Image 1 (tube, helix red, strand yellow):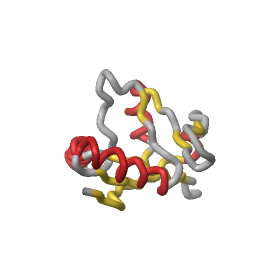
Image 2 (tube, rainbow, N blue to C red):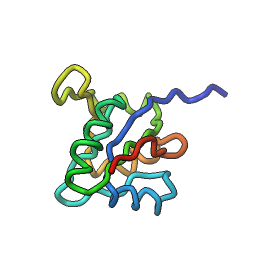
Image 3 (cartoon, rainbow, N blue to C red):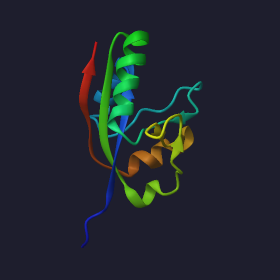
Image 4 (cartoon, rainbow, N blue to C red):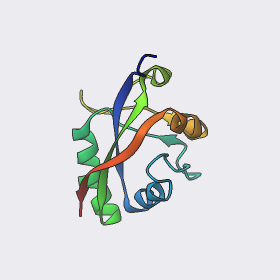
Length: 116
């Protein structure tokens, strides 16, 4: 049996989403709210840090950076989107596909940075 190839992704997360992650035992992203039609994981840690530190802290009082692994073959359906500079890269996962996305997570979602 061959090992499944994975891709490391990051997500800047606020305190409410972090609590929902805890409730899911860090195994699944929570469903999107109606005003959140897209789930945006990002492709590099620095971009996630900037959002968590500069946006989440200002708006939510705290920001967290999470790191997680997803099956690489599954991710091929989502083109990489450049949201600004060369390192501002993200995936756009439609909210209705989030359950399937979660089914392709490998291991736990980890909190790797915290800002207050």
